[in-house]
Image 1 (cartoon, rainbow, N blue to C red):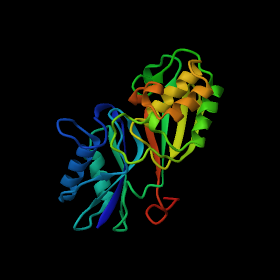
Image 2: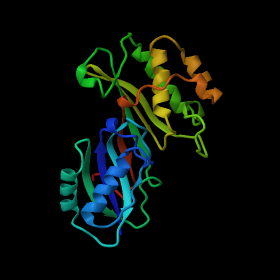
Image 3: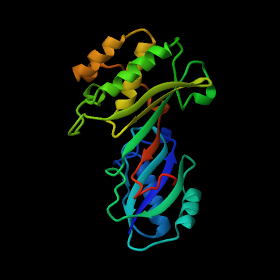
Amino acid sequence: MRYFVQFSYNGKAYHGWQGQPNAITVQQVLQESLSTLIKQEVALVGAGRTDAGVHAKQMFAHFDVESSFDEEDVVYRMNAFLPDDIAVQKLFSVPDGAHARFDALERTYEYLVVQQKNPFYTDSAHYVKMPLAIEKMNEAAALLLQYEDFECFSKSNTDVRTFLCDIKKAQWTKNEEVLVFTIRANRFLRNMVRAIVGTLLDVGLGKRTLQDVKAVINSKDRSKAGASVPAKGLYLTKINYPNTIIPQDG
């Protein structure tokens, strides 16, 4: 039987999602907790990887088990068992072939920026003191929807087969004192969002023009793009799946 688990986490204490030797990861902690509580060894397959320090408001993983269990009871017990920085929202059965990573249609990320020193955002947003031209940043963000190849924003020496991504939305909004960059696409490259945000902030600071951004994308050269912003401001906020896996009202 195949199950999906929906969960969220604060990534500050973890070396990302993906399990690795000699480093604590979200996958490792969640997998060990689930295996213990349902008394079956499980191997979680996540919807994607988040890097060290990145957070997830909504994340999914799938796993296979030999026998069913009380889903609500296990969710309750997992949340008592897990550390405070990981929470499980749902466990539910899915069709046998459903895949948390390959069946995901779209992923949405948010990046938070604050412009005034605020102790409540020290570990959860990027502090930029200098004034930002938000309209120019949005003009530059809109350019992303005109392109498909984002090799310039990809982590160097990565092992992906293609740098093509279909970006559906890229926009800055102001939410009280927090600047929020929202980006939605079918897939993302490693480090892509943080590199995009760094480049757009350069535009907001007057260090780059819109023509510069076009030149960066066309160059396919990571060294031409802006510096990656800190992981602490990045959140995976939503993953969309077909109705056959997760109904839209679910």
